[in-house]
Image (tube, rainbow, N blue to C red; front, side, top):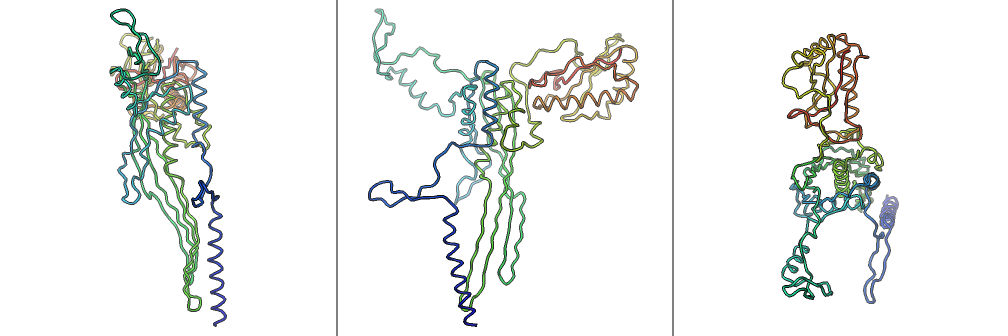
Length: 438
């Protein structure tokens, strides 16, 4: 009995020693004496560029904008703050307070395609403008300025106004959600106080940003993104007596995707989508270059009308006034078929309207405008695919009413690469226009 206890004690002490020796090998660190007389300091990995899965998409968007050979957009960043209110006495704010800085860095990754205007902290510029106004600011040179007696040579820097470049758009918003432990699970098995354990947990954050036209203060686009973070914890423990000695040994590991890095990635994706809207570039091809596979629902990220909306297409029916046909115009009837947001299903109330369209098509021809609510805002690729399904649903419904498919022709639909909305009557946008009948 004494021999077994002694062996167990030696085994336990050896295990503790092995664990203590193995832990430093988990990280790569070295010691370096930085100055004479100082104790050596631990030096870890080298400083590097802060990279995210959005680096490649942002570089792609920069190239797409540059290829259009247009004047670079001037974009400013306002306050992008933490609205979650989550705070810990021991750890401080749970969410980064540097959202605006992250958005600024994302715009910086677009290179020369977008020019970043400083509006977040213009304190120094405003102070120097004050010095200039008081004729206190100089640049080490002598300047000629107009004077009553002709020209005057002065050492202060003259200023005549207009040196600050106006911005075209600015981005504001915030981090609006932090949901702890939305799902967790695990297991622990012990026999004789010896056994393994495993636990997983998930939390999520959400951000809401918008890009605003600086001149009109109209919101050009809003976007809301969410991201989940999953963590794990594994372990193996021993809690038992070996002879007269009690051993409590726990070995394990835990990890989680970095929360603040995930927030930075979400802010960068939101910035890419906002800038692509005002630059009139479809972000789908660039998003495909992200180092993760985008979620399917991201294909339907919100897009709203850009500053200069396209002109109203010619040859399309007038705004809906509650009637489906124009009186006295048997060969030039007009109708409007509405769809709900994101849906390609015809509502039950559309049945009577479709009956009248089929009757008008039998007498001559009818122009049908497909419309949706102006709050439906999709990326160009997603909008084009949804338009295909809506046209197919309308043609199939008319075919069941005796309208031949070959008599349906598309008069107009948006370019699949154009993110702009075409407004129709108040509260509606135009999706496509069809001519039905002979």
